[in-house]
Length: 309
Image (cartoon, rainbow, N blue to C red; front, side, top):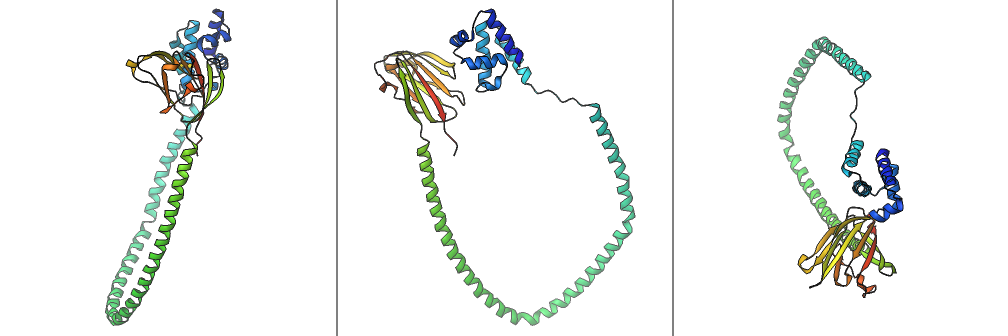
């Protein structure tokens, strides 16, 4: 895949652009630009960003991005396994061996046929003897009825005692299960409380603010709206790539932006922050408490996802 990076690098140099110039224009971090030129696509956040960064890089240096994306798909396509001459020869030998094994099997069946007939005759004789013996057993069984009735009575008493013991055991197990369910419910409530989404301001410099978004899901959702009678231009970027920008008004209702999976940095550019309301994953984001007099501001969210329990 190095050839894709080489094409982009040469085009950048022909335009007289440095990596810093390209970072300023595309908003793609410099380390990702270097990885693209080196063909190290594994260093990028994911497949979505590989295609997005290559497309944005190509458009900036004046190259048709579709040609590079087709080349990327061709490089990633699995190559068909070629059948070698040795493999073909091995399969032919295997088929010949299978054909040879068929005749000895048939010969073995014919060789043991007399033995099989003798076994069948012996089984028939034993079956006849068993039938006569069973008839004698029925005649003797009538003399044991009285003894059996007493045995049944004793067995009934033993069964009643066993049933009582099982009922006590079942009651004890039910109580233990109830305690375990109560403990499990309490643990789930504590786990849910511990993983509640939290947004904390970590720095503020002029109109730029940085926050930590803790216990966030893998895929985040941003909702924006403005107050009645107001308009506001806003933009949203994920890991340096712009995913939405537009002007909101009361007529637009609410704009919902889905952030790509496993995004680590979300940037919000607000043109009229005093009239803009924001929800992150359904929870209100009270960003105005950090200098509510500002109109234009840039908000950076460092995303820390929920750790699986």
